[in-house]
Amino acid sequence: MMSVFTEFWPQILVFLALFLLVLVNYFNYCYRYWSKKGVATIKPRFPLGNTNIILPQGLSIGILSKQFYDEFKAKGHKFGGVYLVTEPNLLIVDPEYVKDIMSKDFQHFVDRGFYYNKEKDVLSAHLFAIDGSDWRNLRIKLTPTFTSGKMKMMFEAVVQCSKHMIENLDKNLGSDIEIKEVLGRFTTDVIGTCAFGIECNSFKYPDAEFRMMGKKIFEYDLWKSVKAFFAVNVPKVALQLGLTSTPDDVIDFFTRIVADAVKMRESNNIRRNDFLQILIDLKNTTSLTLDEMSAQVFLFFVAGFETSSTTMTFALYELARNEKMQEKLRFEICQVLDKTGGQITYESLIEMKYLQQVIDETLRMYPPLPTLNRRCTKDYVLRDTNIIIEKDTPILISALGLHMDPEFFPKPEKFDPERFTEEKKKERHPFVHLPFGDGPRNCIGLRFGVMQSKIGIITIIKNFKLTVSSNMKPVQFNPYVFLLNINDKVLLQVGKL
Image (cartoon, rainbow, N blue to C red):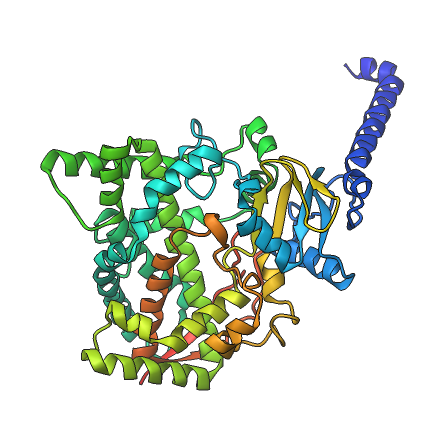
């Protein structure tokens, strides 16, 4: 074998050199796409283009998109072209163009362009990812799910879950508390109750299967991050490579639990006020399949579990750092709840204006989705230019870039809920604060997420005083995740009032 290699090694080296030359030329050809259109670019590097996020110590797409935004904005560009590996993406800077893409000319940008696979990865085919008529039809079916009436049906269940959280914190007064873990258990209990009608009690049973599956979904390593990168940014390659975004045991768990719950309810004529019941009713009236139901329940779980717990974590962290703001919020909570005998009601949430400002400011500084993705579905001419965005071109909108732009939010690194008074909001462009996206493809469950977050924050601030632990490390964002999150624990000290 060695002698054969020795005999042909010159030919092998020539072949490898030619292959590398062809590959480099192909990449360089791809990297001329935007310059040929007259669009400003950031110089790409072989072989990853403008991204290093699949390398160790890389950047998440959210942080990377913000860097793109900052660079184009500093040079006075309203948009610019970047390359994720070889695929050209258009990053939007000007909020007027953001409005065009997300709302005014939405019919040209209906799709997100994410990976999903109905056959091999059934949980990936949820409302957030699917495209075209599949998305439109499912959105119409699910829109009634999150009306005010449906929110009120689930409201009391969320309040009941918050009581377990008080009991847990009471047992840990004066010690360092990993607040994200506490809030993760709370949101797990909420999703268990509101999605499936089951009582998880994650505070009593932290290792229960439901809780463990929730944690597993968001456990990231380098390989999982590579798969997520391809799924989000080059979904066609992900499909060709046969990559899946969901572990097999997670798929098995959610499909099994949905199928078992549907069978049990239909066999025993049981009805409950939860998300699954709404899906069962849709199944019986609009031909929703069990796989589609499982995917939507999975999305409800992921969004409710992770984004809400992260939002509450950052809100409480900032309030723990700012004693006066914490006191101001506590005063508002107590003042409003005095009218209801101390009981949290659906109407009392609406009355708490400063609480809404705290959440809005938290979502500005820590948007769960720091990058918003769209894909052009038919050729489109950018307003006031001759530039044609071709069909299938991915669009990047850096929510984090807009949120941290000093033109729109002076001293953006400072946590300041006063930015979101009604007067201040009227002074700003409506498309510079995008925590849930905007337009027809915004987050369908945003009202549930905000309701859950408000109840969690009210429960803690009403009963406890928060300070930041001296053992907490400086906040650093995790480079391996799609959703904005931090590397280390958020450690708070909780004291009784």
